[in-house]
Amino acid sequence: MWAYLTVVIFAAAASEGWSVGDRETARAIRSSFVSFFEWFGELGIFCGRLIRAAIAPPFEARELIRQMDAIGAKSLPLVALAGAATGVVLSLQTRDSLVRFGAKSLLPAVIVFSLIRETGPIITGLVVSGRVGAGIGAELGSMKVTEQIDAIEASAVNPYKFLVATRVLACVAMMPLLTLAADFCGILTGWIANTLAEPISFRLFVNNGFKNVTFSDFLPATFKTAVFGWIIGLISCFQGMRTHGGTEGVGRAATSSVVLSSLFIILADVVLVQLILVFFT
Amino acid sequence: METQTDQTPIVVKGLTKSFGEQKVLTGVDLSVNRGETVVILGRSGTGKSVLLKLLIGLQQPDGGSVKIAGQEIAGLSLDELNEVRKKIGFLFQQAALYDSLTVEDNVAFPMSRHTQLSSEEQGKHVRELLKNVGMEQDIGKMPSDLSGGMRKRVGLARALALDPEILLFDEPTAGLDPITSDEIGKLISRLKEERKITSVVVTHDIVGAKEFSDRFVMVHEGKIVIEGTLEDLQKSKDQFVVQFLRGVV
Image (cartoon, rainbow over all chains, first blue to last red; front, top):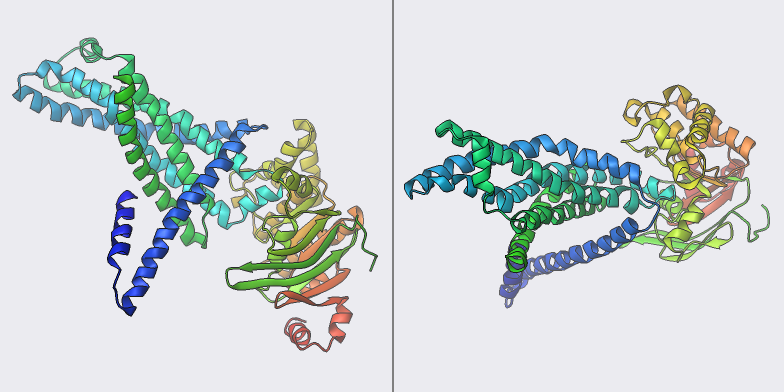
């Protein structure tokens, strides 16, 4: 998004002195520029409506539980698999490097630190944004184009409360739990990969791995995924609720939900890692 | 026609609505009396469905006034607007049933949020509503398992769930075969007789609408060009009305 903004600014700046034919291009760039800020403005308004709907009773407890199941429990196999694969890759790649520097005994600590501080949370964020983001974007998009959201409003029910708040809260609540699952699977398969090369007991692997780990390594990194959950829920619901243009629009909503939520997760991760380093180190 | 009072269920004055450069409604005046069924006719894309959505506050007008049971709906807060919406049932063109809920949960959706009924009472009421539209056998089905006509029936049962004073129908027979269209028409007639509900029906099916209509209204170029019985419309010398009826009847 920032790269896009930079391109737009440079293109707009470069358009000065263009001929009549090029003015149309400049107008198109200006229109993209306006759309860019409109998008953020609309997202801000959407966010306000979401917060108002989420804090005011009555609460949609039944729908929230259904969404926690759909977002959390049903993402678990994929997240666990991604975590497990990451653990194996980390073990194989790191082992080779550490052996070269004679620091083989640090392998459990490297795997554990890497997984719980960064790899587990970001992998979980990206995997869930792919699975859940696309699902929410497509579901709300198709509800929008088939007038189901209008029908909810016509039934005197606030769709922000029933559809948006429940999905966003479920994403926020489930992300740290899914991250724990990814971390656990990664550490387990990291140990398995290590043991195949050089047998070591799981207890010893875990003891060595967690010897220097503190709560400030574990908690902020795990709970930052609640912010990732907020991003996934918010962006996907927003893109879904503003869908137009029939089935083609539904496809666009699903794609843009995944692309934008993944992008914002990466950007948020940069900021959050810096904040965690400042406040917890 | 009755005299317009503060309690006239629907009063629309000078209603205008545009989408970008396209002017859809350019000054619609309409009043619907208690228990009356008004059928809105007009070419596709002339703003008939938009008019229905403006009546229930799903879209905001650019100008003019919409009063439901004496209450102006423009400028209401969401909570106030929802109180007005509880008095209105809306049957959407494609029924707009919630894909993730069963037929039973679809019909119970407004009830579970706006009434104090216990789950048993709700279940009983849902079964009654579904029985009225001939769908009690399909209570546990998902919307994807239903045909177009069945979806419309369930949509009608959901629209009746809060016992509304006003019903809005957006092309209730569009895309249905003649027999199913006739059945839906009979359902609307029966509702009119039994419940004395005030209704506004947008349709292209003039022959079917004759069964339940008290008054026809024809919209052209954003305005109402004629209103009256079907006979009044047929006597009209207006070029558009003549052309429209010749094309349909």
